Length: 197
Image (cartoon, rainbow, N blue to C red):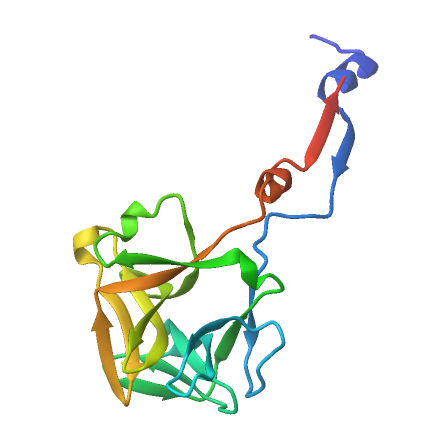
């Protein structure tokens, strides 16, 4: 029978000190419940024909979580799903204290996979597709909508926006990306110092 002296054994496996900062791996944006009032930190995604802002929303619709557009003074969100669908419950709005960290990147439906150096902002999910947030200029408006991305570029479905009650599919569009503060991500990933004796 092998016996170990407790102090030697403990010295081999004991971590004497762990410094753990309170910062975690997180992005500096969030989805807030929307009940008709635009939060101060809501992120603007586009503009209507009169120049009023269109905000980036997310709505639960028939077992799918879809990117949506939200207008100030309107309790509803609008999603593109075969036509323009008005959703009146289960709505969220994209918020951030750092709007300057978001950039719109021009792309095409079959070239999204080339954006490997960009952090795309996920806007929802539906079966067989990841949904990202996109926008395009259409009929004097910059409209936000859903970029449908599949496992292969040839299966991507482009940007789906809604306008005047109809769904419009756009193949050339802008996609929303998030640019974290330099060295912020590295610091957050490496936030523990461990000393083993």
